[in-house]
Picture 1 (tube, rainbow, N blue to C red):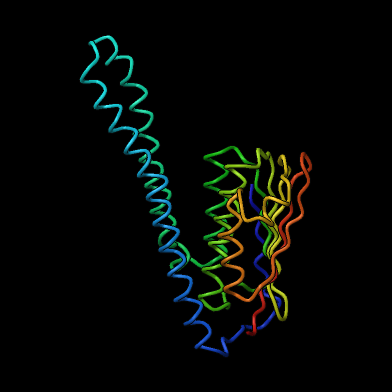
Picture 2: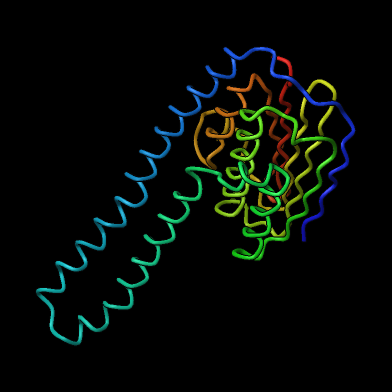
Length: 228
């Protein structure tokens, strides 16, 4: 179950540097294109090649073998459909534009919980709707990436997300009770999909700290400055 605190405790933040926002947006768009290209090639592309090879192999099998292979091919097709849906949802967070960041992240948490059984608690403190569009979009993307990493790798039962709007920055904490991992993997840039999160935080001139121990879960702490 998610819980939301939408009390506004700080005045709106005005973006004082349009050039920086434009530069960040352009850089972010290019990063998104590169990420999408990788996902299409490594995800959907490989699934399609696999299904193609399976279908071609049926030409040389008897009727009994064909019937046995059909359920497996159907499963692979379902994976392709799910992957296309996931990429499509990631391309344009229309819910963010239409309903605001609080609703968008809450909706993301609810969908993730319903689809995976993960117990997710979510707490907002402060006024997030007055943040500029770039920061709101990136916070949403970071949340997506964090939940995706946890679902894929953490083997967690519970996740806590806390977002606090402070005077000069946004504090974002993500904690799970999963299996944890070796921090050396992050230092060498491998595994767990943390690179996308780090790239987005860097584009906002923010900082990210990762604290994880094997079998003791993981906590990620992100600070995003509001005046850049």
